[in-house]
Image 1: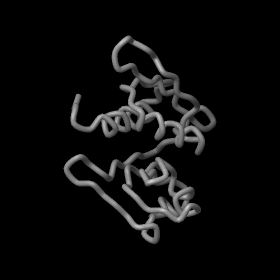
Image 2: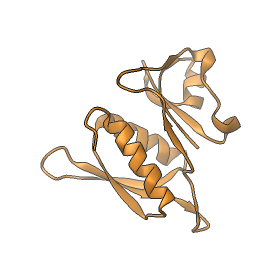
Image 3: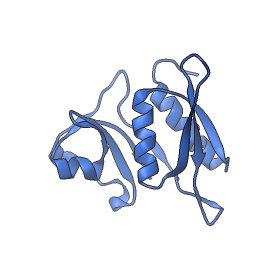
Image 4: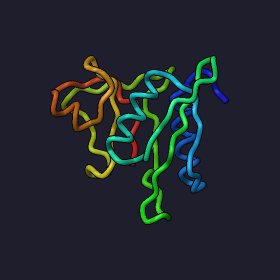
Length: 132
């Protein structure tokens, strides 16, 4: 597992877990990941997440969501900003993912937020990932 980009690793584990129809996946904890998981929960892409304390870094157990028991709520996740190539966008250039069916998650000067919140607050920032 890569140590240079733990957010990309966590998003990959969530994507692979939903494709394999797993009930839950366990990912390493970080403050940024907690904010991303909170947005995914509010937008209805995951059921729940819980912190598991292991006396070190800790981890999150992410409970995946499925529609009608079969179709995964997350069909794709794309990490856009990487450690070697940060991807910043202006407030006018915030993308609509799949015509509004998906979300983009941004790290702004006002915190981590979804694309619609960033448009409403009129801020741009680092485009972390897209989820659909």
